[in-house]
Amino acid sequence: MKKKVMLTLFVLNVFAVSAQDQIIIGKDTLVNQSNATRDHSVLKKIAIPTVLVGYGLVGLTSGEIRDINRQVQRKVGDHDNSTKIDDYTRYAPALSVYALNAMGIKGKHNFRDRTVILLTSQLIMCGTVMSVKSLAKIERPDGTTDNSFPSGHTATAFSGAEFMWQEYKDVSVWYGISGYVVAAGTGFLRIYNNRHWVTDVAAGAGIGILSTKLAYWLYPSMQKLFFGTEENKMSAIALPFYNGQQVGLNLALKF
Image (spheres, rainbow, N blue to C red):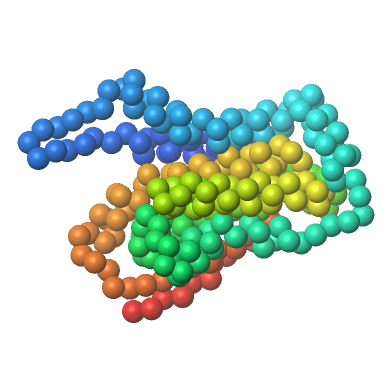
Protein backbone atom coordinates (compact mmCIF):
# COMPACT_ATOMS: atom_id res chain seq x y z
CA MET A 1 0.00 0.00 0.00
CA LYS A 2 2.75 2.46 0.94
CA LYS A 3 4.56 1.76 -2.36
CA LYS A 4 1.42 2.60 -4.32
CA VAL A 5 0.93 5.84 -2.38
CA MET A 6 4.57 6.83 -2.86
CA LEU A 7 4.32 6.07 -6.60
CA THR A 8 1.27 8.31 -6.96
CA LEU A 9 2.98 11.25 -5.25
CA PHE A 10 6.28 10.58 -7.03
CA VAL A 11 4.52 10.97 -10.38
CA LEU A 12 3.23 14.38 -9.27
CA ASN A 13 6.76 15.53 -8.47
CA VAL A 14 8.18 14.10 -11.70
CA PHE A 15 5.65 16.07 -13.72
CA ALA A 16 6.48 19.21 -11.77
CA VAL A 17 10.21 18.83 -12.38
CA SER A 18 9.77 17.86 -16.04
CA ALA A 19 7.64 20.91 -16.69
CA GLN A 20 10.58 23.10 -15.68
CA ASP A 21 12.86 21.70 -18.39
CA GLN A 22 12.50 24.58 -20.82
CA ILE A 23 14.58 25.71 -23.77
CA ILE A 24 14.65 29.45 -24.35
CA ILE A 25 14.61 30.30 -28.04
CA GLY A 26 15.94 33.75 -28.94
CA LYS A 27 15.82 35.58 -32.25
CA ASP A 28 19.13 34.27 -33.52
CA THR A 29 20.36 31.98 -30.76
CA LEU A 30 19.33 28.89 -28.85
CA VAL A 31 20.13 29.17 -25.16
CA ASN A 32 20.18 26.15 -22.86
CA GLN A 33 20.27 26.90 -19.16
CA SER A 34 23.01 25.01 -17.37
CA ASN A 35 21.88 21.83 -15.65
CA ALA A 36 23.26 22.95 -12.32
CA THR A 37 21.41 26.27 -12.34
CA ARG A 38 18.19 24.73 -13.59
CA ASP A 39 18.22 21.87 -11.12
CA HIS A 40 18.94 24.23 -8.22
CA SER A 41 16.03 26.47 -9.23
CA VAL A 42 13.61 23.57 -9.57
CA LEU A 43 14.61 21.98 -6.28
CA LYS A 44 14.33 25.30 -4.48
CA LYS A 45 10.78 25.79 -5.74
CA ILE A 46 9.52 22.33 -4.80
CA ALA A 47 11.63 21.73 -1.68
CA ILE A 48 9.11 22.78 0.97
CA PRO A 49 6.02 21.04 -0.48
CA THR A 50 8.08 17.92 -1.18
CA VAL A 51 9.26 17.81 2.43
CA LEU A 52 5.66 18.19 3.62
CA VAL A 53 4.49 15.31 1.43
CA GLY A 54 7.50 13.23 2.47
CA TYR A 55 6.76 13.80 6.15
CA GLY A 56 3.20 12.66 5.62
CA LEU A 57 4.32 9.53 3.76
CA VAL A 58 6.88 8.58 6.38
CA GLY A 59 4.19 9.02 8.99
CA LEU A 60 2.17 6.20 7.43
CA THR A 61 4.58 3.64 8.86
CA SER A 62 6.71 5.49 11.42
CA GLY A 63 5.75 4.67 14.99
CA GLU A 64 7.42 7.83 16.30
CA ILE A 65 5.51 10.13 13.96
CA ARG A 66 2.25 8.35 14.71
CA ASP A 67 2.95 8.93 18.40
CA ILE A 68 3.38 12.64 17.63
CA ASN A 69 0.06 12.54 15.79
CA ARG A 70 -1.68 11.12 18.84
CA GLN A 71 0.02 13.56 21.23
CA VAL A 72 -1.04 16.56 19.15
CA GLN A 73 -4.54 15.17 18.83
CA ARG A 74 -4.89 14.80 22.60
CA LYS A 75 -3.80 18.41 23.13
CA VAL A 76 -5.65 20.04 20.23
CA GLY A 77 -8.52 17.82 19.17
CA ASP A 78 -9.68 16.35 22.48
CA HIS A 79 -12.69 18.59 23.20
CA ASP A 80 -16.40 18.83 22.56
CA ASN A 81 -16.26 22.01 20.49
CA SER A 82 -16.07 22.07 16.73
CA THR A 83 -16.52 24.53 13.89
CA LYS A 84 -17.42 24.27 10.24
CA ILE A 85 -15.63 27.46 9.23
CA ASP A 86 -12.90 25.37 7.58
CA ASP A 87 -15.51 24.18 5.07
CA TYR A 88 -15.45 27.75 3.76
CA THR A 89 -11.95 29.04 4.48
CA ARG A 90 -10.47 26.39 2.19
CA TYR A 91 -11.89 28.32 -0.77
CA ALA A 92 -10.99 31.79 0.51
CA PRO A 93 -7.51 32.18 -1.05
CA ALA A 94 -8.59 31.23 -4.58
CA LEU A 95 -11.79 33.28 -4.43
CA SER A 96 -9.81 36.26 -3.12
CA VAL A 97 -7.91 36.37 -6.42
CA TYR A 98 -11.17 36.99 -8.28
CA ALA A 99 -12.36 39.45 -5.63
CA LEU A 100 -9.16 41.50 -5.88
CA ASN A 101 -9.41 41.60 -9.67
CA ALA A 102 -13.04 42.70 -9.39
CA MET A 103 -11.89 45.58 -7.17
CA GLY A 104 -9.41 46.67 -9.81
CA ILE A 105 -6.29 45.17 -8.25
CA LYS A 106 -4.97 43.23 -11.21
CA GLY A 107 -2.91 40.08 -10.84
CA LYS A 108 -0.53 38.39 -13.26
CA HIS A 109 -3.09 36.81 -15.62
CA ASN A 110 -6.37 37.83 -17.21
CA PHE A 111 -9.68 36.17 -16.33
CA ARG A 112 -9.44 33.39 -18.91
CA ASP A 113 -5.85 32.46 -18.20
CA ARG A 114 -6.10 32.41 -14.42
CA THR A 115 -9.34 30.41 -14.59
CA VAL A 116 -7.73 27.74 -16.77
CA ILE A 117 -4.76 27.62 -14.41
CA LEU A 118 -7.04 27.28 -11.39
CA LEU A 119 -9.08 24.51 -13.02
CA THR A 120 -5.91 22.65 -13.97
CA SER A 121 -4.59 22.96 -10.44
CA GLN A 122 -7.84 21.70 -8.92
CA LEU A 123 -8.03 18.73 -11.28
CA ILE A 124 -4.46 17.72 -10.44
CA MET A 125 -5.00 18.25 -6.73
CA CYS A 126 -8.35 16.45 -6.51
CA GLY A 127 -7.15 13.54 -8.62
CA THR A 128 -4.07 13.10 -6.46
CA VAL A 129 -5.91 13.45 -3.15
CA MET A 130 -8.67 11.02 -4.08
CA SER A 131 -6.21 8.46 -5.47
CA VAL A 132 -4.03 8.55 -2.37
CA LYS A 133 -7.04 8.40 -0.04
CA SER A 134 -8.26 5.24 -1.76
CA LEU A 135 -4.81 3.65 -1.45
CA ALA A 136 -3.80 4.74 2.05
CA LYS A 137 -7.10 4.04 3.87
CA ILE A 138 -6.06 5.78 7.09
CA GLU A 139 -8.75 6.07 9.77
CA ARG A 140 -9.72 9.57 10.83
CA PRO A 141 -9.02 10.63 14.44
CA ASP A 142 -12.76 10.66 15.16
CA GLY A 143 -13.09 7.13 13.76
CA THR A 144 -15.82 8.02 11.27
CA THR A 145 -14.15 6.95 8.00
CA ASP A 146 -10.89 5.53 6.66
CA ASN A 147 -10.07 8.28 4.15
CA SER A 148 -8.08 10.59 6.42
CA PHE A 149 -4.80 10.75 4.48
CA PRO A 150 -4.23 13.27 2.98
CA SER A 151 -6.44 16.20 3.98
CA GLY A 152 -8.54 17.37 1.04
CA HIS A 153 -9.59 20.59 2.79
CA THR A 154 -5.95 21.48 3.41
CA ALA A 155 -4.92 20.60 -0.13
CA THR A 156 -7.67 22.85 -1.50
CA ALA A 157 -6.66 25.72 0.78
CA PHE A 158 -2.95 25.51 -0.03
CA SER A 159 -3.51 25.13 -3.76
CA GLY A 160 -5.53 28.34 -3.54
CA ALA A 161 -2.84 30.02 -1.44
CA GLU A 162 -0.16 29.19 -4.01
CA PHE A 163 -2.53 30.43 -6.73
CA MET A 164 -2.88 33.74 -4.87
CA TRP A 165 0.88 33.93 -4.35
CA GLN A 166 1.63 33.38 -8.03
CA GLU A 167 -0.92 35.98 -9.14
CA TYR A 168 -0.01 38.71 -6.66
CA LYS A 169 3.57 38.23 -5.49
CA ASP A 170 4.71 40.93 -7.93
CA VAL A 171 2.02 43.33 -6.70
CA SER A 172 2.63 42.79 -2.98
CA VAL A 173 3.96 39.75 -1.15
CA TRP A 174 1.41 40.40 1.58
CA TYR A 175 -1.40 39.17 -0.62
CA GLY A 176 0.34 35.83 -0.99
CA ILE A 177 1.27 35.69 2.68
CA SER A 178 -2.34 36.34 3.71
CA GLY A 179 -3.45 33.46 1.50
CA TYR A 180 -1.01 31.12 3.19
CA VAL A 181 -2.10 32.31 6.64
CA VAL A 182 -5.70 31.39 5.80
CA ALA A 183 -4.57 28.03 4.40
CA ALA A 184 -2.54 27.28 7.53
CA GLY A 185 -5.55 28.18 9.65
CA THR A 186 -7.67 25.77 7.63
CA GLY A 187 -5.15 23.00 8.23
CA PHE A 188 -5.11 23.73 11.97
CA LEU A 189 -8.90 23.61 12.12
CA ARG A 190 -8.91 20.17 10.48
CA ILE A 191 -6.84 18.96 13.43
CA TYR A 192 -8.84 21.00 15.96
CA ASN A 193 -12.08 19.49 14.65
CA ASN A 194 -10.63 16.01 15.15
CA ARG A 195 -10.93 15.26 11.44
CA HIS A 196 -7.27 14.86 10.55
CA TRP A 197 -3.86 13.93 11.89
CA VAL A 198 -0.88 16.26 11.56
CA THR A 199 0.56 14.06 8.81
CA ASP A 200 -2.70 14.32 6.83
CA VAL A 201 -2.51 18.10 6.94
CA ALA A 202 1.20 18.22 6.06
CA ALA A 203 0.75 15.97 3.03
CA GLY A 204 -2.37 17.84 1.93
CA ALA A 205 -0.53 21.16 2.07
CA GLY A 206 2.34 19.79 -0.01
CA ILE A 207 0.03 18.28 -2.61
CA GLY A 208 -1.92 21.52 -2.91
CA ILE A 209 1.18 23.64 -3.46
CA LEU A 210 2.71 21.22 -5.97
CA SER A 211 -0.56 20.98 -7.90
CA THR A 212 -0.71 24.73 -8.44
CA LYS A 213 2.98 25.00 -9.30
CA LEU A 214 2.52 22.26 -11.87
CA ALA A 215 -0.53 24.03 -13.32
CA TYR A 216 1.49 27.23 -13.81
CA TRP A 217 4.38 25.33 -15.40
CA LEU A 218 2.02 23.54 -17.78
CA TYR A 219 -0.07 26.54 -18.78
CA PRO A 220 2.19 28.05 -21.49
CA SER A 221 1.98 24.78 -23.43
CA MET A 222 -1.76 24.49 -22.79
CA GLN A 223 -2.26 28.07 -23.94
CA LYS A 224 -0.57 27.40 -27.27
CA LEU A 225 -2.46 24.14 -27.72
CA PHE A 226 -5.96 25.41 -26.95
CA PHE A 227 -5.89 29.13 -27.65
CA GLY A 228 -3.05 29.73 -30.08
CA THR A 229 -2.30 33.40 -30.57
CA GLU A 230 -5.89 34.60 -30.97
CA GLU A 231 -7.56 36.37 -28.09
CA ASN A 232 -10.40 34.22 -26.88
CA LYS A 233 -13.59 36.19 -26.27
CA MET A 234 -15.20 33.60 -24.05
CA SER A 235 -15.30 34.28 -20.33
CA ALA A 236 -15.90 31.71 -17.66
CA ILE A 237 -15.94 31.27 -13.93
CA ALA A 238 -15.48 27.93 -12.25
CA LEU A 239 -15.80 27.11 -8.58
CA PRO A 240 -14.45 23.65 -7.72
CA PHE A 241 -15.54 21.94 -4.54
CA TYR A 242 -14.29 18.96 -2.56
CA ASN A 243 -15.86 17.79 0.72
CA GLY A 244 -13.60 14.88 1.59
CA GLN A 245 -15.70 12.34 -0.29
CA GLN A 246 -17.01 14.11 -3.37
CA VAL A 247 -15.43 16.35 -5.96
CA GLY A 248 -17.29 18.61 -8.34
CA LEU A 249 -17.23 21.79 -10.35
CA ASN A 250 -19.69 24.65 -10.75
CA LEU A 251 -19.06 26.26 -14.15
CA ALA A 252 -20.62 29.33 -15.77
CA LEU A 253 -19.78 30.36 -19.35
CA LYS A 254 -20.40 33.63 -21.17
CA PHE A 255 -19.95 33.86 -24.94
